Image (cartoon, rainbow, N blue to C red; front, side):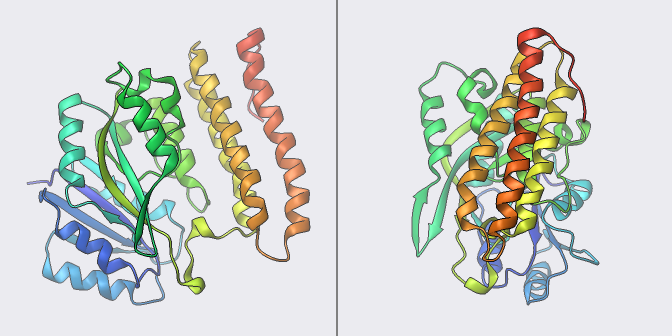
Length: 316
């Protein structure tokens, strides 16, 4: 019989964190799941660690990429072969709370939601702190009269990471929602499309996900690295969100407003990470930023014009 949940883990050079990640699954209160460990051509001991778990627990399955393709591709690989009715994404340096699968699944079944969110805490120096934007919005939602987050305007700010949630697999497959590949910030594009295509979105108040801030300086995560590609790829993510807004627009101006909100929020985040750019690329980043902001303003104007003046939208 097929498992109820498929947990998809993209693995790449996380030998110092991977065992704890996988142990957090072995100890889950809900047990009817498979774990798809998709290795993206690691050069450390990650594959051997995965094989160890595969040998001792037949729910764990190792899938090997022949070359490194970035975090989006392993998640897509896992999604295409997943057998579960529901899907959970877990990064290989993070952990799930012991009852995460059980609590998320129960709420998804009860509400028939396309995806369900839970709280996320960050683990650094053995201390846990909440992820502020998630905490704030979930707290506000808990005091609102709405069962469905789609009816709660501010909830749209739940963009970004695809973790700390459970998805119905058929919702993702039928809507052809996959991750952009070979791009940084692929999770933003994925989350934007998921939100706009979902019918029902709900939440639970429990902490379900523990994100790790890596302390080993020679092996930081992609989200801690700001090379030139991480900036250039932000152009492509803006383009994806713009095109999704156009594609989904059916005289529903809320789609366009969400597109504008997402693009503007992403742009503000861009400005905040510029001081952390790698040494030696400051001049290139400054030149790129001028072009980037010009492109953003043009996209936002096109969406605004459609709302204000009923002008046609254009791809460019």
